[in-house]
Image 1: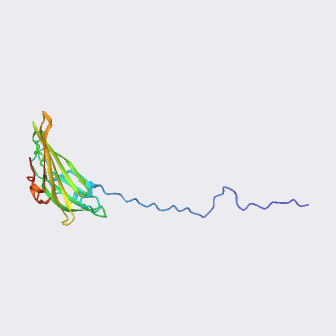
Image 2: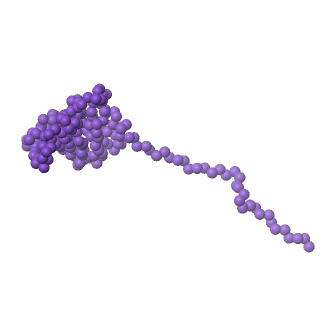
Length: 203
């Protein structure tokens, strides 16, 4: 009797399949955000550098805007206190993340030598709900602070001086500070571009 023979296996486990090429899914590049330093560079004139920036909604349109404070590039690094103007730029943002220059003032930010023996009086910028403020601090034995605030007006699409306030005190008795506050009732209607720095100054 002939021996029974089993049918040969059609495929052997572990044998590679011939003629099939695996294709990897394409890798999509992730958009890279452009650093603020690059975006803002085109707003900095020759001979100036960025002193400070602040981000917030300056005109209540839900897009982030910028305040850009500039300072002149010093020609003598060892010189104490420059009197050069420090422009402050209002930059409005859009849906594409770009900015346009909306307003400029050269007197709102005090000069580097305007703080007396205390040195540079500039303290910083703040943006909140269509308002923005600048803060300064200086003096010697007698010290002073000054906060200047502007408010956006949707009707005119401009920023107007809202108030100017601060304190004066002697360094030996800071608890006896005298405060002051001036509003539009005192200095009238002053736009950001027209602000000279003298409005509401002092007590």
